[in-house]
Figure 1: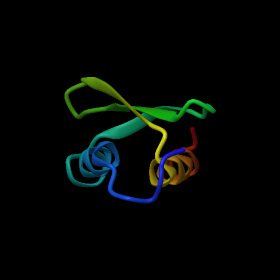
Figure 2 (figure 1 turned 90 degrees about the horizontal axis):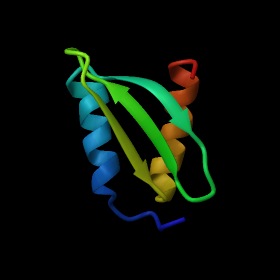
Figure 3 (figure 1 turned 120 degrees about the vertical axis):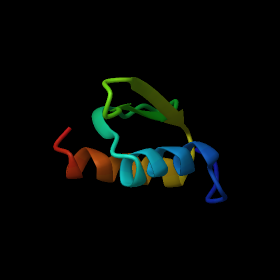
Figure 4 (figure 1 turned 45 degrees about the vertical axis):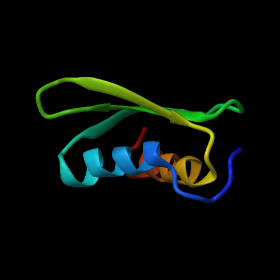
Amino acid sequence: MAGWGDDPVLAELRTLVYEEGWRPVAVTDSTDGDSVEVEGPGGERRTFASDHIAFHRFVEGLGEDFDL
């Protein structure tokens, strides 16, 4: 896993979920890096992946918060 520094993937994901109303629909835990699929208000879906520690912890929390 990558270090604790800034992760632009995580920053974009946080913005979509907490500011733009996107909803996590799937979380994948992998030794190669975690991923999360989110769905926007219009039905568009995007997948985000990163091996960053902060991303991993955030995705774990999303899985718990959204019952995924």
